[in-house]
Amino acid sequence: MGRREVDTTAYVDFARRIIRAAGDRVGRGDDWELGELTSLRDDLERAIARAVEGQRAQGHSWAYVGDGLGISRQAAQQRYGERASA
Image 1 (cartoon, rainbow, N blue to C red):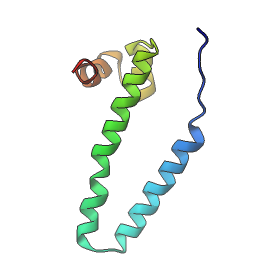
Image 2: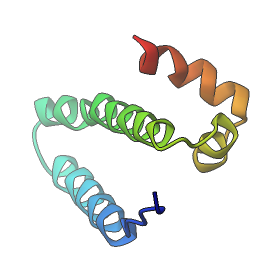
Image 3: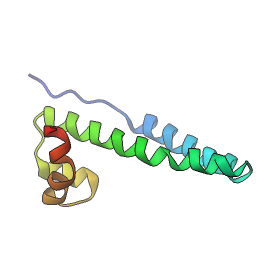
Image 4: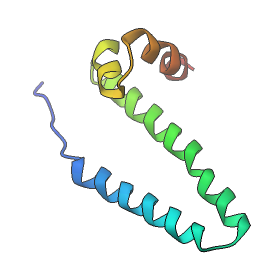
Protein backbone atom coordinates (compact mmCIF):
# COMPACT_ATOMS: atom_id res chain seq x y z
CA MET A 1 0.00 0.00 0.00
CA GLY A 2 1.53 3.33 -1.09
CA ARG A 3 1.65 6.39 1.04
CA ARG A 4 -1.07 8.87 0.18
CA GLU A 5 0.02 12.50 0.22
CA VAL A 6 -2.65 15.15 0.61
CA ASP A 7 -1.72 18.80 0.13
CA THR A 8 -3.68 20.63 2.78
CA THR A 9 -1.45 23.68 3.22
CA ALA A 10 -3.61 25.96 1.07
CA TYR A 11 -6.75 24.66 2.77
CA VAL A 12 -5.40 25.34 6.26
CA ASP A 13 -4.18 28.79 5.16
CA PHE A 14 -7.70 29.51 3.91
CA ALA A 15 -9.18 28.47 7.29
CA ARG A 16 -6.65 30.67 9.06
CA ARG A 17 -7.68 33.69 6.96
CA ILE A 18 -11.36 33.06 7.70
CA ILE A 19 -10.73 32.85 11.45
CA ARG A 20 -8.75 36.08 11.41
CA ALA A 21 -11.49 37.79 9.41
CA ALA A 22 -14.07 36.49 11.88
CA GLY A 23 -12.08 38.07 14.72
CA ASP A 24 -12.08 41.39 12.88
CA ARG A 25 -15.83 41.20 12.25
CA VAL A 26 -16.64 40.24 15.84
CA GLY A 27 -14.45 43.11 17.01
CA ARG A 28 -16.85 45.43 15.22
CA GLY A 29 -19.97 43.48 16.25
CA ASP A 30 -22.17 42.81 19.23
CA ASP A 31 -21.21 41.28 22.58
CA TRP A 32 -22.95 37.95 21.94
CA GLU A 33 -20.87 37.40 18.81
CA LEU A 34 -17.74 37.11 20.94
CA GLY A 35 -19.22 33.98 22.48
CA GLU A 36 -19.86 32.60 19.01
CA LEU A 37 -16.24 33.20 18.05
CA THR A 38 -14.89 31.55 21.19
CA SER A 39 -17.02 28.46 20.47
CA LEU A 40 -14.63 27.82 17.58
CA ARG A 41 -12.08 26.60 20.12
CA ASP A 42 -14.11 23.46 20.72
CA ASP A 43 -14.55 22.93 16.98
CA LEU A 44 -10.82 23.30 16.43
CA GLU A 45 -9.98 20.86 19.22
CA ARG A 46 -12.40 18.29 17.73
CA ALA A 47 -10.82 18.81 14.30
CA ILE A 48 -7.34 18.23 15.74
CA ALA A 49 -8.54 15.08 17.51
CA ARG A 50 -10.00 13.76 14.23
CA ALA A 51 -6.74 14.53 12.45
CA VAL A 52 -4.75 12.69 15.12
CA GLU A 53 -7.11 9.73 14.87
CA GLY A 54 -6.62 9.71 11.10
CA GLN A 55 -2.85 9.90 11.40
CA ARG A 56 -2.86 7.01 13.87
CA ALA A 57 -5.19 4.99 11.61
CA GLN A 58 -2.62 5.43 8.84
CA GLY A 59 -0.07 3.80 11.13
CA HIS A 60 1.83 6.88 12.25
CA SER A 61 3.53 6.63 15.64
CA TRP A 62 2.79 8.82 18.61
CA ALA A 63 6.25 10.34 18.09
CA TYR A 64 5.25 11.34 14.54
CA VAL A 65 1.96 12.79 15.77
CA GLY A 66 3.67 14.60 18.63
CA ASP A 67 6.17 16.15 16.22
CA GLY A 68 3.30 17.43 14.10
CA LEU A 69 1.60 18.91 17.14
CA GLY A 70 4.80 20.39 18.50
CA ILE A 71 4.60 18.34 21.69
CA SER A 72 6.25 15.17 22.97
CA ARG A 73 5.14 11.69 22.03
CA GLN A 74 3.98 11.11 25.57
CA ALA A 75 1.98 14.35 25.71
CA ALA A 76 0.29 13.53 22.40
CA GLN A 77 -0.64 10.06 23.57
CA GLN A 78 -1.91 11.33 26.92
CA ARG A 79 -3.99 14.06 25.33
CA TYR A 80 -5.40 12.21 22.33
CA GLY A 81 -4.89 8.51 23.05
CA GLU A 82 -7.92 8.14 25.28
CA ARG A 83 -10.12 9.93 22.76
CA ALA A 84 -9.07 7.58 20.00
CA SER A 85 -9.84 4.50 22.11
CA ALA A 86 -13.11 5.91 23.51
